Length: 604
Image 1 (cartoon, rainbow, N blue to C red):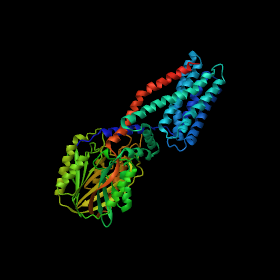
Image 2: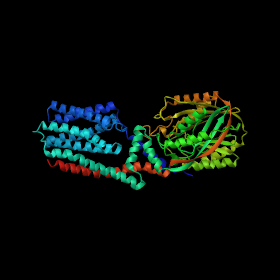
Image 3: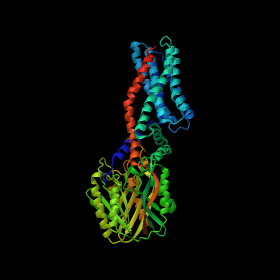
Image 4: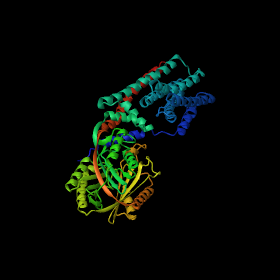
């Protein structure tokens, strides 16, 4: 029953790479940095041997030509390309100028000892490096037509090397511009193109050989999603590589004179990240069902992992449509039990009975409460049926994340706590109950802060004197001890028993750079403000308590396209393997390129 953590590990590793791809300076910063590099850096290297005014003119010209070329590239040549905005195009040039300036400085140092022709030769080497860099960046990331990519690659370095040539021609006694120089200017892009093609094709062959995946188009699809939130290009591949599955959904609804509230648990993992696949399912399902019935809806996490991520957002709506169709029934159960809580080791199970349905949840807080295996849910459901119940809605609270993930070692504790909790809950007398609900959408807490668009939903149940509050936060797990702080605050507000859930939405995942690619709830949020919002939601839910009836349905949504565990693991593992492959081949490929370029320079 122990879950396989290898998929989660590969997912996390991949997300870290995506999160670090585009940590770029702002436009103003990049603009000033390019200006400083050209006007100050290049001018100073030239001033070591040439007149100050001429050196400054060279530096200013290079900056002006770079800005002009980047403007034409982003606004004309690659107009409409979501990757290469003016900012990103300028950053590519900034990196190129950083490398070019390094060669210019080396040329100055050697020029004092061996003659200023070396400064010109190192300038040409810098040009070759910049062209190679641009071949790599534009060919790896842009989906534009080949001629557009080629023009984008060559325009800026060609204009700049032309400025150098004009400068050198002005001082023939220092630098002689021979036919060999022009030969090098023409040959360098050809050599760079060959080197980059060898590198990228080796990575592409790796994907096709190991996983039958086109590595470069897949990589571009990931980049489009990261940079421009386009989900269709990547989901096209996921749909093609996925398989159809029958998805189980359990719906527990509460009606007064009209629909009051609902808890929906689809056996779908809300991933893999950002807006891809089922990442948005909790908030989408909440929004669409609320729109249809006018009640408050929450979508906590079931017991499963990434093995059941949906292949595309289109599959979300298959589930949503079936949920809406299946929710059109009248609940009949008028009795409920109080909430019962049982702890076994580090595991805690909470259970409340509504008619013939058990609502049971798991947490290990303040220990890590991450994805739990489907097998545990099946065991709980079978145990519930043995006790005379018809349905079991089993929920993973997913409400604490620490540096230690040891869930597999405590599954027996979870099973034992659930069994004891079920038996105690079933043994209690059931009474009429009331339900209150309320949702808040804190504007202060964004996706980058760790909260999805589903906000915070509070469901309050009163059975005789016991008032129970269920808090469902649209986020991906919580920082340690936050659950306990929330429960303490709710107790102070008069609630007798409470639990806190997250939806595990992966809409927040890959929303930030570095680290694990997202913030768990409470990591960067103002916790005092968050707890205040939760308290207000619970009190507002309490204020609209109404006598209700409960009803539960478990149904199947057939032929839903999922990206299975093995295929998803292949995709995410490919990122690491491609990077490893690149590290292995980059030195010999670019080393050979450098050798060829140096041999060309020796011709003059």
